[in-house]
Length: 161
Image 1: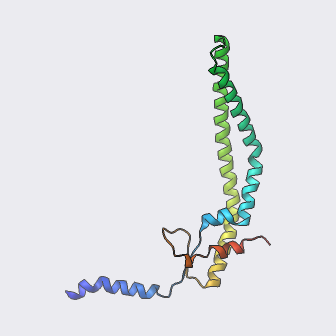
Image 2: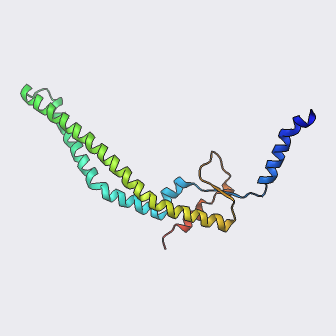
């Protein structure tokens, strides 16, 4: 009977001895995607690529605001008001369509850029893990001790030479 009560303690001791020699590292992938030079370069590339479409959206938005200001004035003839209201509805629909399309295209392009970067990041993580003789590298954690964080070492490997 006493042996049965001690069984969980034996399991904990066995697990502790198995993991006693395990070296664990942590990598902050969000930080890498923000700070790694290839990621920064990809973000700038996307910004430049989508700037004309964003400028067009801002133009449509400004046109809509201008039209709304005209409608807010009460001294417009009713026939003109209806025409302007239809124009505003169409502008609003165009703006929402443009916004949706830009977001979809941007997400697709971002995924393309990140796919290429992910391979380099994984290689850099593997290189650091082998160099540090780590048994396990964790990318997401609720808590981590800063002394197991190898993110800086991975970032150094990702610097363009």
